[in-house]
Amino acid sequence: MATPTKTIRAIDEHTITGATIEQMSTTSNPRMKHVMEALVRHLHDFAREVDLTPKEWIDGIAFLTAVGQKCTPNRQEFILLSDTLGLSSLVNSLHDKRGLEDSTKSSLLGPFYRQKSPVLKAGESISTTAHKGQDVTLYGRVLDSKGAPVENASVEIWQPDENGDYDLQREADLVDLRGTFHTDADGRYCARSVAPTGYMIPMDGPVGDMIRAQGRHGYRPAHIHFLVGKPGYREVVTALYLGNDVHIDSDTVFGVTESLVTAVKQHDPESPIPNLPAIQFNFTLAAAGEAGMGRVGADPAQIVKK
Image 1: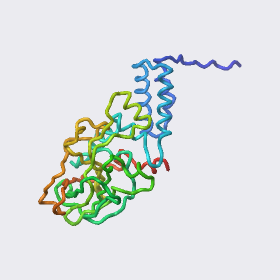
Image 2: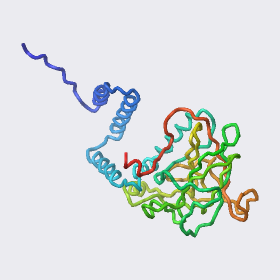
Image 3: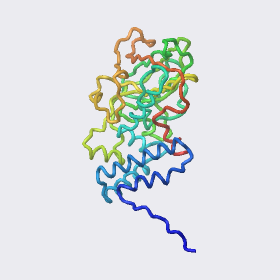
C-alpha cells in the first residue's frame, strides 16, 4: 500500500509566522505559550517592517553574543542593554500598575545591585573608604498607604562614588557606599553618605558602542538607589534624583520620574544629624498583592549563578 503523501506547507515571508506559532501550540505552560506566541509575532513583524537583510541579521547575532560575553559576576551588560532601550522602565511602569494601593514610584534597580549589603545602625555611614564628595544625611520615614508608620522595614541604599563608579566596578570584593537600615517604631530611617554625582554608563562594551552610534550622551543624572520592603508589603525599588543635574531630563536609561526628584538641603533644621546637608524623602509601601518578584534588575552574581 502506498504511503499517503503529506501536504508540505509553502514557507515564505508571510506564512512562516503562522507555521512557527502552530508548531509551538503544544506548549503546556499557558503563560509561556502566550509570551512566546506574542514574541514570534512581533519579532517577525519587525523583520518584515525593516526588510531585515542577512548581514543585518548576523550583525545583530554578533552584537547579542558580545553583550553576553561582557557579562560577569560584577557586570550585567544585558540589563544595561534593557535599560538603555527603555525596556526596563517600561516593565517598571507595568509593574506599578498592578499595585493594589498607591506607593512610591518605582525606578530601576540597575546592573550594580548587590544582595546582602552590610546591616548598619541608624545614623551610620554607608561609606567605608575616603571620598571627596560632600557628606550628607539621608533620612525620612517609611509609611503605609494610609500614612501610618511601618516599623522594622528594611531600607537598602547604594550609590556610586564621586567619580561615578560603584564598588563593583572599582574592585570585585570591595563593599562601599551601600548598606541596609531598618526603620524605628515611627517608621524613621537615617543614614550618612556622600552627595551623589552624575555619571556615564559603562561605555567599554557593546552597549556603549550602540550608544555612541546613536549619538546619545550616555549619562545618568546624580541619584541614590533605594530598595524598601517588609513582609506583607509590596517592595519598592526606586531611586532619588538630584534636580540640579544637567541630565535630569535626558537620563540615558529613562529612570527619572518627577515624584522622585529631590535636592540636597544645605541647612535642614529637621535633619536628625545637625550641621550636615541632608536629603529627606518619605517612602510609601502598598499592601502586598500578586506573588512574584518586582525587581527590574538583579545582583549580577546571582544571574551568572543561575
